[in-house]
Picture 1 (cartoon, rainbow, N blue to C red):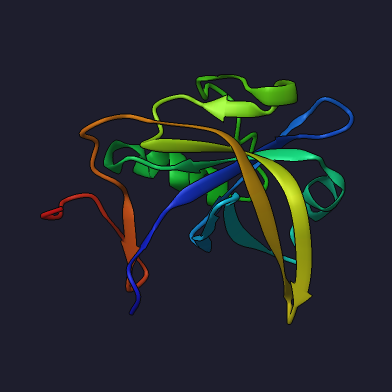
Picture 2: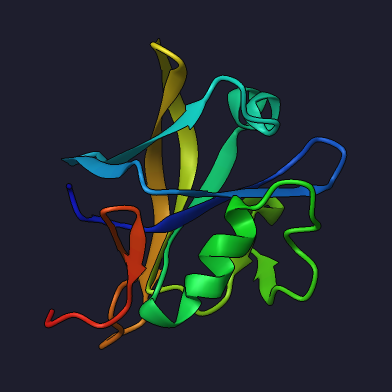
Length: 147
């Protein structure tokens, strides 16, 4: 019963392949230095890429990106097929059209329970002015709200 924003976290694997997943466990940690956190299940197929990687990007999704959130939450498909993106720092894939994007250096990791908490230092960020965020509450996405 806690409303959250919806993000997609992306990275480039050592092989050059792109990885990405939908996450709503995103939070600000510090303004100085600029730090954010997110968490990932230890069982996630992309855990090794994020656990050993140097950089990743967190995309706060806009209300018009619900289909993208669903796509990156689906297993067994090519999540990147037809997704508009461009390279960020060190080639980290940046999805176009996000409400905000945080390009992060992987600063620390904290295993807790069945998840790992990742803390990233924001190296660069951008946003789309005037865009409504995609929200998740009670097991459903919400695109119409009075923010």
